[in-house]
Length: 238
Image (cartoon, rainbow, N blue to C red; front, side, top):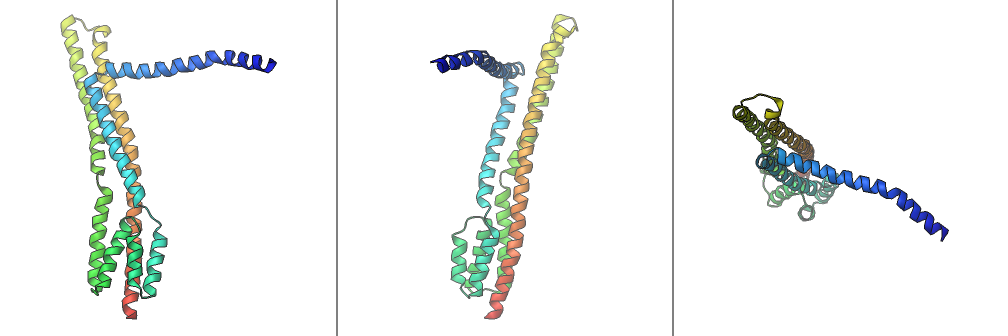
Protein backbone atom coordinates (compact mmCIF):
# COMPACT_ATOMS: atom_id res chain seq x y z
CA UNK A 1 0.00 0.00 0.00
CA UNK A 2 2.83 2.34 0.86
CA UNK A 3 4.41 1.72 -2.57
CA UNK A 4 1.07 2.48 -4.21
CA UNK A 5 0.85 5.91 -2.53
CA UNK A 6 4.48 6.62 -3.43
CA UNK A 7 3.70 5.84 -7.07
CA UNK A 8 0.63 8.09 -7.01
CA UNK A 9 2.72 10.88 -5.51
CA UNK A 10 5.34 10.51 -8.25
CA UNK A 11 2.66 10.63 -10.94
CA UNK A 12 1.15 13.71 -9.33
CA UNK A 13 4.54 15.41 -9.33
CA UNK A 14 5.17 14.50 -12.98
CA UNK A 15 1.70 15.53 -14.16
CA UNK A 16 2.51 19.26 -14.48
CA UNK A 17 5.55 18.42 -16.61
CA UNK A 18 3.45 16.22 -18.91
CA UNK A 19 0.77 18.91 -19.09
CA UNK A 20 3.37 21.53 -19.94
CA UNK A 21 4.86 19.30 -22.65
CA UNK A 22 1.41 18.67 -24.17
CA UNK A 23 0.70 22.37 -24.06
CA UNK A 24 3.98 23.11 -25.85
CA UNK A 25 3.15 20.50 -28.52
CA UNK A 26 -0.27 21.99 -29.09
CA UNK A 27 1.12 25.50 -29.16
CA UNK A 28 3.75 24.46 -31.75
CA UNK A 29 1.06 23.13 -34.09
CA UNK A 30 -0.97 26.22 -33.40
CA UNK A 31 1.99 28.40 -34.36
CA UNK A 32 2.40 26.50 -37.63
CA UNK A 33 -1.29 26.90 -38.34
CA UNK A 34 -1.11 30.60 -37.56
CA UNK A 35 1.88 31.15 -39.84
CA UNK A 36 0.19 29.16 -42.59
CA UNK A 37 -2.87 31.43 -42.39
CA UNK A 38 -0.81 34.61 -42.02
CA UNK A 39 1.27 33.70 -45.06
CA UNK A 40 -1.86 33.56 -47.15
CA UNK A 41 -3.75 30.25 -47.46
CA UNK A 42 -3.60 30.38 -51.25
CA UNK A 43 0.15 30.71 -51.66
CA UNK A 44 1.01 28.55 -48.64
CA UNK A 45 -1.31 25.82 -49.93
CA UNK A 46 0.56 25.83 -53.26
CA UNK A 47 3.92 25.61 -51.45
CA UNK A 48 2.58 22.74 -49.31
CA UNK A 49 1.28 21.01 -52.46
CA UNK A 50 4.74 21.27 -54.03
CA UNK A 51 6.17 19.58 -50.93
CA UNK A 52 3.57 16.79 -50.94
CA UNK A 53 3.95 16.03 -54.65
CA UNK A 54 7.73 16.23 -54.46
CA UNK A 55 7.86 13.84 -51.51
CA UNK A 56 5.49 11.46 -53.33
CA UNK A 57 7.93 11.23 -56.27
CA UNK A 58 10.82 10.85 -53.81
CA UNK A 59 9.14 7.89 -52.08
CA UNK A 60 8.35 6.25 -55.43
CA UNK A 61 11.99 6.60 -56.54
CA UNK A 62 13.37 5.30 -53.24
CA UNK A 63 11.21 2.18 -53.51
CA UNK A 64 12.15 1.62 -57.16
CA UNK A 65 15.88 2.12 -56.61
CA UNK A 66 15.92 -0.12 -53.55
CA UNK A 67 14.27 -2.86 -55.60
CA UNK A 68 16.80 -2.27 -58.39
CA UNK A 69 19.73 -2.98 -56.06
CA UNK A 70 20.89 -6.62 -56.04
CA UNK A 71 24.01 -8.53 -55.06
CA UNK A 72 25.87 -7.84 -58.29
CA UNK A 73 28.96 -9.88 -57.43
CA UNK A 74 26.86 -12.94 -56.66
CA UNK A 75 24.89 -12.57 -59.92
CA UNK A 76 28.02 -12.15 -62.04
CA UNK A 77 29.72 -15.08 -60.34
CA UNK A 78 26.68 -17.33 -60.90
CA UNK A 79 26.43 -16.41 -64.59
CA UNK A 80 30.17 -16.85 -65.15
CA UNK A 81 30.06 -20.25 -63.46
CA UNK A 82 27.16 -21.36 -65.66
CA UNK A 83 28.92 -20.17 -68.83
CA UNK A 84 32.14 -21.91 -67.83
CA UNK A 85 30.06 -25.09 -67.65
CA UNK A 86 28.76 -24.32 -71.18
CA UNK A 87 25.22 -24.02 -69.77
CA UNK A 88 23.69 -20.90 -71.30
CA UNK A 89 20.20 -22.03 -70.31
CA UNK A 90 21.15 -22.10 -66.63
CA UNK A 91 22.75 -18.65 -66.85
CA UNK A 92 19.63 -17.33 -68.56
CA UNK A 93 17.38 -18.86 -65.92
CA UNK A 94 19.44 -17.26 -63.14
CA UNK A 95 19.02 -13.83 -64.72
CA UNK A 96 15.29 -14.28 -65.28
CA UNK A 97 14.81 -15.11 -61.59
CA UNK A 98 16.77 -12.03 -60.48
CA UNK A 99 15.16 -8.60 -60.32
CA UNK A 100 16.79 -5.34 -61.27
CA UNK A 101 18.29 -3.63 -64.33
CA UNK A 102 21.55 -5.60 -64.30
CA UNK A 103 19.70 -8.91 -64.56
CA UNK A 104 17.59 -7.47 -67.40
CA UNK A 105 20.71 -6.48 -69.35
CA UNK A 106 22.23 -9.91 -68.76
CA UNK A 107 19.02 -11.58 -69.96
CA UNK A 108 19.04 -9.71 -73.27
CA UNK A 109 22.71 -10.50 -73.85
CA UNK A 110 22.30 -14.22 -73.01
CA UNK A 111 19.25 -14.54 -75.26
CA UNK A 112 21.40 -13.36 -78.18
CA UNK A 113 24.21 -15.66 -77.11
CA UNK A 114 21.80 -18.58 -77.05
CA UNK A 115 20.56 -17.67 -80.55
CA UNK A 116 24.14 -17.75 -81.82
CA UNK A 117 24.45 -14.05 -82.61
CA UNK A 118 27.85 -12.40 -82.97
CA UNK A 119 29.82 -10.70 -80.20
CA UNK A 120 29.17 -7.37 -81.89
CA UNK A 121 25.42 -7.89 -81.67
CA UNK A 122 25.69 -8.93 -78.02
CA UNK A 123 27.80 -5.86 -77.26
CA UNK A 124 25.24 -3.61 -78.97
CA UNK A 125 22.44 -5.24 -76.98
CA UNK A 126 24.28 -4.65 -73.71
CA UNK A 127 24.90 -0.98 -74.62
CA UNK A 128 21.33 -0.37 -75.80
CA UNK A 129 19.62 -2.02 -72.85
CA UNK A 130 22.08 -0.38 -70.48
CA UNK A 131 21.01 3.04 -71.76
CA UNK A 132 17.36 1.99 -71.50
CA UNK A 133 17.73 0.83 -67.90
CA UNK A 134 19.60 4.03 -67.00
CA UNK A 135 16.61 5.97 -68.30
CA UNK A 136 14.30 3.93 -66.08
CA UNK A 137 16.49 4.67 -63.06
CA UNK A 138 16.39 8.42 -63.72
CA UNK A 139 12.66 8.46 -64.42
CA UNK A 140 10.65 11.08 -62.42
CA UNK A 141 13.79 12.80 -61.11
CA UNK A 142 12.96 15.73 -63.39
CA UNK A 143 9.63 16.15 -61.56
CA UNK A 144 11.50 16.48 -58.27
CA UNK A 145 13.74 19.17 -59.75
CA UNK A 146 10.59 20.93 -60.99
CA UNK A 147 9.17 21.14 -57.45
CA UNK A 148 12.57 22.21 -56.10
CA UNK A 149 12.43 25.18 -58.46
CA UNK A 150 8.70 25.79 -58.10
CA UNK A 151 8.58 25.99 -54.27
CA UNK A 152 10.83 29.07 -53.84
CA UNK A 153 9.31 30.62 -56.96
CA UNK A 154 5.87 30.39 -55.36
CA UNK A 155 7.37 31.84 -52.19
CA UNK A 156 8.85 34.79 -54.08
CA UNK A 157 5.52 35.30 -55.83
CA UNK A 158 3.90 35.48 -52.40
CA UNK A 159 6.59 38.00 -51.45
CA UNK A 160 5.68 40.20 -54.39
CA UNK A 161 1.98 39.97 -53.53
CA UNK A 162 2.73 40.81 -49.90
CA UNK A 163 4.71 43.89 -50.92
CA UNK A 164 1.87 45.04 -53.17
CA UNK A 165 -0.50 44.53 -50.25
CA UNK A 166 1.79 46.59 -48.02
CA UNK A 167 1.83 49.48 -50.51
CA UNK A 168 -1.95 49.28 -50.88
CA UNK A 169 -2.29 49.56 -47.10
CA UNK A 170 -0.01 52.62 -47.13
CA UNK A 171 -2.12 54.26 -49.84
CA UNK A 172 -5.36 53.54 -47.99
CA UNK A 173 -4.03 54.76 -44.63
CA UNK A 174 -2.09 57.68 -46.05
CA UNK A 175 0.65 56.76 -43.59
CA UNK A 176 3.88 54.75 -43.79
CA UNK A 177 4.03 53.71 -40.16
CA UNK A 178 5.32 50.18 -39.31
CA UNK A 179 1.88 49.13 -38.13
CA UNK A 180 0.37 49.79 -41.54
CA UNK A 181 2.95 47.84 -43.56
CA UNK A 182 3.49 45.03 -41.04
CA UNK A 183 0.72 42.81 -42.39
CA UNK A 184 1.92 42.82 -46.00
CA UNK A 185 5.56 42.40 -45.01
CA UNK A 186 4.64 39.42 -42.83
CA UNK A 187 2.94 37.70 -45.76
CA UNK A 188 6.01 38.36 -47.91
CA UNK A 189 8.47 36.89 -45.42
CA UNK A 190 6.41 33.83 -44.45
CA UNK A 191 5.81 32.69 -48.03
CA UNK A 192 9.49 33.14 -48.90
CA UNK A 193 10.61 31.12 -45.87
CA UNK A 194 8.10 28.37 -46.64
CA UNK A 195 9.23 28.06 -50.25
CA UNK A 196 12.93 27.95 -49.32
CA UNK A 197 12.34 25.27 -46.65
CA UNK A 198 10.42 23.07 -49.10
CA UNK A 199 13.15 23.47 -51.73
CA UNK A 200 15.87 22.55 -49.22
CA UNK A 201 14.02 19.40 -48.11
CA UNK A 202 13.46 18.21 -51.67
CA UNK A 203 17.05 19.08 -52.67
CA UNK A 204 18.44 16.82 -49.95
CA UNK A 205 16.27 13.93 -51.13
CA UNK A 206 17.17 14.63 -54.77
CA UNK A 207 20.91 14.46 -54.07
CA UNK A 208 20.39 11.21 -52.16
CA UNK A 209 18.48 9.67 -55.09
CA UNK A 210 21.07 10.92 -57.56
CA UNK A 211 23.85 9.23 -55.60
CA UNK A 212 21.90 5.93 -55.61
CA UNK A 213 21.33 6.16 -59.37
CA UNK A 214 25.03 6.82 -59.99
CA UNK A 215 25.99 3.85 -57.79
CA UNK A 216 23.61 1.49 -59.63
CA UNK A 217 24.75 2.73 -63.05
CA UNK A 218 28.37 2.17 -62.02
CA UNK A 219 27.52 -1.40 -60.98
CA UNK A 220 25.73 -1.90 -64.30
CA UNK A 221 28.81 -0.84 -66.26
CA UNK A 222 31.18 -3.06 -64.24
CA UNK A 223 28.83 -6.03 -64.47
CA UNK A 224 28.37 -5.54 -68.23
CA UNK A 225 32.14 -5.62 -68.76
CA UNK A 226 32.39 -8.80 -66.70
CA UNK A 227 29.55 -10.39 -68.67
CA UNK A 228 31.14 -9.49 -71.99
CA UNK A 229 34.42 -11.04 -70.88
CA UNK A 230 32.58 -14.22 -69.85
CA UNK A 231 30.77 -14.33 -73.20
CA UNK A 232 34.07 -13.95 -75.09
CA UNK A 233 35.59 -16.84 -73.10
CA UNK A 234 32.49 -18.92 -73.81
CA UNK A 235 32.64 -18.32 -77.58
CA UNK A 236 36.40 -19.03 -77.73
CA UNK A 237 35.85 -22.43 -76.11
CA UNK A 238 33.32 -23.46 -78.78
